[in-house]
Image 1 (cartoon, rainbow, N blue to C red):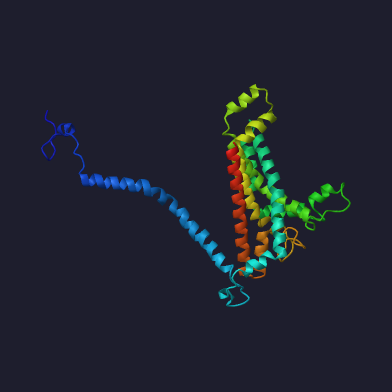
Image 2 (tube, rainbow, N blue to C red):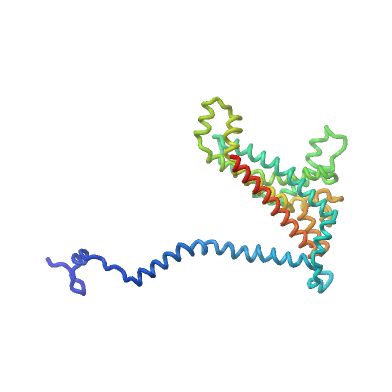
Length: 331
């Protein structure tokens, strides 16, 4: 039986026995050039969309805001966008008592909300790390406040902290002489706004801690148990040190988020001019920026507030970075 012969007169069996023809030197050089280009250029192509979006929606607004901060632009004065005032807006800002008050409120509310929030998140994550019944349902449940609209949360908490018919004052009625006006005093308003922030973000941080806890080797807990360590000692001396990078991350992110706090005090405020209370008890920096921009129409001054807040955030981030480096070097 004869084998099939191709159009060149050679059978397939004979083609299989022939050695492969090496590519020409020109083709080898071209392939080598493409390989080097792929290795060196592909990573830049992958990150290019991010930097493109950042340039359009991040870098350009930042630069444009810096330019506006040196003008006296106001829609109530036509042509004022071209009037340059140099650093006068920043000079006026440093002497603005309302800005100083807003800065104090921002740091105060941030401290009152961040510390309990992270401690509660750490405790909830530790409980969810046990083998409980319905663990998946409980883990999904702690995320519900995070996915809930801030407006809906503020609406509920406005009813809870209402002076005359609020749920919290009804609970405190046997212990106080008169209903507490949560918006009237500085500390009470800070606690009310912090309660909203804590409610909204605790579950989110708890899931971050939970994911980090599940990466801790079980052998560490087993060794600690053999050595006679209790559950609390295991949590203190095994879990907490293992979560140190995650805890540092959540502290930095929560601090930056506290500096940008706006929605909760804005929705908790019952005044119509965004004062953050009758005497600016809980007016944050971003709320003050919003008031100067939309209510007062001082675009240049509001841009100066935005850039000052940006610089404050950068300084705090650098301080956190230095603390992280010191902690790591100590370890």
